[in-house]
Length: 247
Length: 228
Image 1 (cartoon, chains in turn orange, cyan):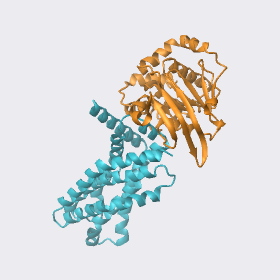
Image 2 (image 1 turned 90 degrees about the horizontal axis):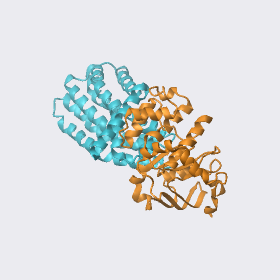
Image 3 (image 1 turned 60 degrees about the vertical axis):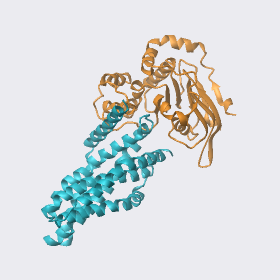
Image 4 (image 1 turned 90 degrees about the vertical axis):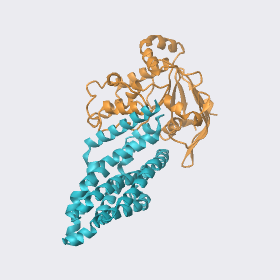
């Protein structure tokens, strides 16, 4: 049974949940102002999910729920179907059987409402190399129907450590910086659910710690996060892990 | 509210595609260079007699423009697919339909429009009579827009394949043929001082049909191409 694979990481005492919330209250306010409403009780629910690739079962009978404030890590070795699972949950892939619910409604009925609250960062570049970070983010915001001022975008780029690079073409940036441009979307697009596929790729150590902090801040503000990483996570929050390697 | 959202979405996509193309010249200049080169080779290949060239010019110009458009069509979604920005388009809660129209129009502005603006020059090279120039430009401008929409369907279907080039040609070339027939016959009619507006009107019909229906096919094809 897949429920057995839901490990509650014992390394993080539940007290740190509150501790984390108090510690970074100011930052949590930022997300709260950006996300507007706090995620309803019932967030993402997955029932009996099954998927296979080339006649190989990636996962079967997978069940979990992801509610406000939850951080869920999908673990597993290469090729175990982590990205496939995230793409299914983002609605990019239909190669599955089973049910996915968003706020108690089936995803098929709720697609627009779901996409409005979803921010998916895949492992692709996600940015146009010929354009500057500012232009890329302007487009990303416009795509979501947001009229974010350049100031908001500048702020977001400053938060990801790209101050002074706003107007440079992205191809002249390093791999880690390009990844940061993509991650800057977290700061300009309000969402209730983040799906992050390997967000730490090409990011330096300090950057990884920062992203971990953003994730826990976002969760404190009522967001839900689903991510894959091979990096040992050190977060100030209880972290749930689903190991796809066990299938 | 909704219409304002859609128009700003269209403007954002157009702006992005045009400014990205402005910084990468090769993508849109290659088909244009192809158009010029092939047209310039014809007088060398079939001899410089003005009457002969003038007779063949409408057909040559239209066939080469069509092939240039075919050459350009692969790039409509290729870049977005490779850098995963296509996923962002699909994951927007805003409708995909206007985004696809904007992308195709941007592609036409970079491939079809320069082609039709350049065509009188190549018409002179091929001794096309002056009477045919207006019809040539108008038919190419309208026709290449149809070709862009048809090409975008093929591009969307094959964008997930590593080597989709030949398949793309096989899919869209049959659909190009009516456009070629009406386009070149408009130019021929104008050269012979006959009425050419009916042919242009047919191209206009094709354009409106493509504008309304092709994006539906493109949206579906993109979802399939990304879902693998």
